[in-house]
Image (cartoon, rainbow, N blue to C red; front, top):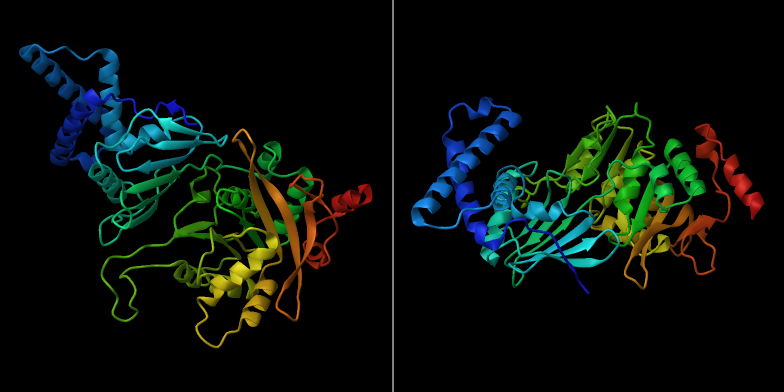
Length: 454
């Protein structure tokens, strides 16, 4: 059952006026001499004055034509709508401003559906597009003006993936689907620590202490889970445990971790994202001209004197250079992977890595490469209660111990469910390989006390 929430502050009767005012403002901005020399604050004041001038003109027209004047509330709604379009994301901005929204799903000119942080689904107050074509035009404007670089959204490039100015992730499709569809994922927890995740119930205090020990011992970690399980949030928190004097990099298809946007961002860290390239093809490679993939970023990162690398999500052939980096001087690296369990993770990782091997590499060799590079798997789960609410939590922390003759990776589950119906991980046993902790001077005595208490 969906419930409407306020997702569009401008009544339909005033939307046409807001569009006219917006068009007039864009014309004024384009023709204003020296606007490049104005800072953002001055530009905002200038635009606000122009909006008011256009509304005054509208009021005079209504007097002449004998029409009812706009009330103060309607005028403010038009001002907000125009400012959102000039500085924000137009009518989509109102959806992002809804308190507690986590996912926004838009299908053409239908009323958007909003998934809230508690897992419930609600309808927005009204549609944000007059037609399917109108939605496409809005997304094209956002792609051209509100990303880290200009992106296309056209019949030739029907997929769009980008980060919005507030850090949200936008994904859109057109032409290959009956109607244009858009999904926006809000990242509610960006400046997050392991202590924060303990407080909200994602993990226990012993797990937080052990994960801190893994990061400080430069142990490579694979974070797994299904979509929306909380993998990216946990990866952000793990990255906050890295010594700020370390040089490390975050590599992503589209920026999501956003560590570089934090006020206390590590000074030696740098963030890089992929570039989709143009519709033209490089005759030498057959790839889109200007395209830069995660594999390209990984290769370049090896030349940037980094001690470890964080890959936002491994999906394909970039898995191979990542594993090679972990085995050749970048211990302590981290990444996420879609998988249903810690045991399934290596099958999916090897499948992804094999895409980049070409011929001559066996599954067994790549499996051993993965097991040597990845030392721990942290598996996230999310469950839905009968009332529709959701909970995200750590379900497993597993040490990679060996590869069997049949190519299976053996896991030593340090934390896993107790078997009483609760899927949350609890302490089970001590790590087999304690050398990384000893070499890093990390004390695991808190685990021994956990073991004694069992």
